[in-house]
Length: 425
Image 1 (tube, helix red, strand yellow):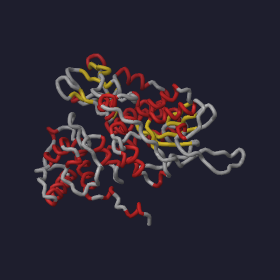
Image 2 (cartoon, one colour; image 1 turned 180 degrees about the vertical axis):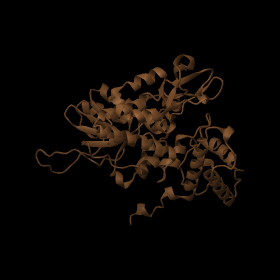
Image 3 (cartoon, one colour; image 1 turned 90 degrees about the vertical axis):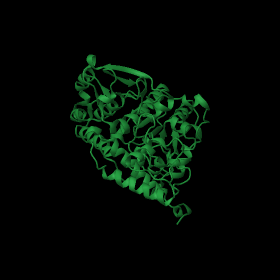
Image 4 (cartoon, one colour; image 1 turned 120 degrees about the vertical axis):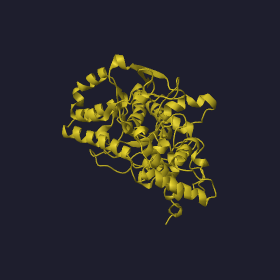
């Protein structure tokens, strides 16, 4: 047994498990559509979570929350690092980590990752998004139409909001015929809570609807938009002019639209360098297949996760088909700017099944591509270890699954400069 195996698994740490239960409760309560129709008792998950939190606070000699409402106030107002849980691993959470966004009252992305991604269990929302994607794959495979699957994925990324005119255009797109029935299910009427004065407002960066949080302010549900500052105003949709508005259901906005916009932004940047880029090849075996003029191929999966430890624990080798020469995972640069140890924590927590898979920022990937296009072939122009070993003539096969240690993140600028960088929307 190695020294690493002797270290207790922090995912089974009792206080981390407790926070998972609290995060799950937060999501259950956030899913209540109308408080007017809500009646006591609270959902069982919420009551179990508050009971466990009270017990642990009493054991630690700390004042516990008085009930579910106060637990929700903790989730919104108290960074996780300040909760009276003395068994939490040191430095697992920082001062910015909350379960509920302080400004909007919406569950944070970290809350979703604790309840969904950090553990083996799945939330209903996460199951829904996977069900939709898998059903789209099945339908497009049955029609032998990978183009339809790509069109479907691109629709979810580029048009999370549809007006009546948009809906009519989508309804006549022949590429979307195999998944028409899915589109009718996944786009739902927009709740009135998004409306102010008879109109809705889209974020100019990520295209999703903004949430009105005061008489004058709007809030974007995307972490990256908030990191870059106040959301820039995009399309103003006046209901009297555009008719009924539909938007993707939240699990798809959270787990497909957001990460997908990082993928398409990277696609555009790489195409601008003169590279051939195939999106979601092999029915989504990975996100981008990048081919250089000399035939060398990179395979890239884009991951936009708030917490690097959960990302590291989920790491797996990139699928071997369609074949490639090098592979890596990519995270939006702003994640590393917001958390300086992001790449190091990922490397520390990276699962053995990943076979040393590198994690680069999108900025680092584009720079490596520029260097390789300019003729360089050293480590800075590579994203992973090359496939090695003899091959028979005519049977060359791409499919490297090992990579060098992750590169160091670029120096983090101070003050406002840290908010600059690639716009992935």
